[in-house]
Image 1 (cartoon, rainbow over the protein chains, first blue to last red):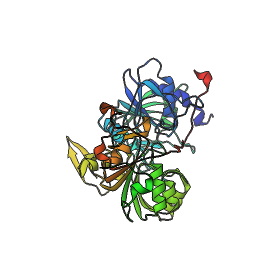
Image 2: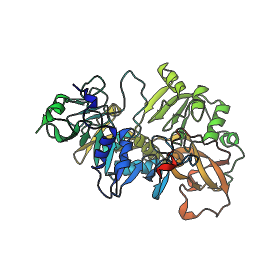
Image 3: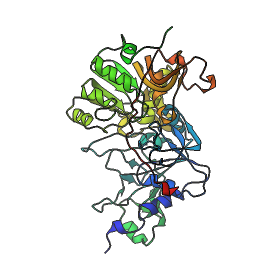
Image 4: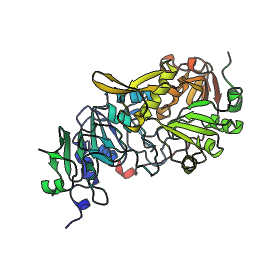
Amino acid sequence: MMPSEAMGWDRNQMAARAADELEDGWYVNLGIGIPTLVANYVGDKDITLQSENGMLGMGPFPYEGEEDPDLINAGKQTITELSRTSYFDSATSFGMIRGGKIAAAILGAMEVAENGDLANWMIPGKLVKGMGGAMDLVAGVGRVIVVMDHQNKAGESKLLKSCTLPLTGTGVVDRIITNLGVLDVVEGGLKIVELADGVTEEQLREATEATIVN
Amino acid sequence: MKKVYGSASEALDGLLHDGMLIAAGGFGLCGIPELLIDAIVEAGTKDLTIASNNCGVDGFGLGKLLDSKQIKKMMSSYVGENAEFMRQYLNEELELEFNPQGTLAERMRAGGAGIPGFYTKTGVGTQIAEGKEVKQFHGEDYILEEGIFADLSIVKAWKADDTGNLVFRKTARNFNPPAAMCGKVCVVEVEEIVERGSLDPDHIHLPGIYVHRIIQGQHEKRIEKVTTRSREEA
């Protein structure tokens, strides 16, 4: 048997699938990790990326030697601006997040529950660095899309009946993209939208603790 | 009234006292008031509560005030980029109040705008909501968050005129305007003090009404994470 982590989509395929979720004209916030890779797959769509430290129209990393200490993203990485870029302060930035102006956020997760609860900011007993802007984003943006591995390293489902870790938000997740497929949070549980390449519905169901509804 | 001072220490003269609440601008190491932080280290003011999104890194930014054990409590959204922070926190030498980033920014803005509290959906049903009033609007739950009224604001801008009108540069603006607004007194450090009239009035990011003292100085502007792309990708 193939180990489950080798099944289905890899990181880039998950990012590419997540990019399919974005619609022309959207303002979008991408989280750290696989969500950052989504920017590589938006193609011809007119997508404006928000960086919650105060920027719309985030450009790619700078060429070596052209880093600007006054120009970083929310992950504190050096970036560049585009012709459409605008800058603003943190209160304005979270005003547009809280106010529902950002169409979607694509975020990583440690756990998602079948009712849409999300846990992605702390593991009790481990070093806690803080939630940053994650709680504001999940509470405010139009659509929350989670990109995550379906199971942890021990092979346990990260899509649960209820989260065990402290929550980032309750009932906030709309869609989950994992290495095994795409699932929506619906009344009563998760609904399979799509299976990843080479993954059967039975395999996905076996790998999932959360209730799967038809 | 003269707002321009000769040095960070001069600008802070008479404003510091033990146990005070300071709001500091900056995100990570970007747009932090490094000169004013150095001057507070020098002054040795103790038991500080600091509202700032982050707490610097080891040996730089607010990390210097950790090294000198001047901070009693941090109000932040993301910390732990420094080992000394974690050491003091785990030894219970340092209090930490986590605030969601947008809530922290709005608490500062609200304080500066004379708003003692506001309701937000951020954090409903999470640890952050514990002990906070919950109120329903349009059938949804919101929690009450309080405005921050700081004793002092320390802020970094790019340019100022001598009346305190400020212009920030790129993402170094971040928490600086809301932090500036919420203090009883606001001290700003800039890279350049320009002639009155040379800033376009339509392009002022923060009007001088919020700014009480200004200094000009040299900034290290350390980069936390240098990320680049290779030229071939172009």
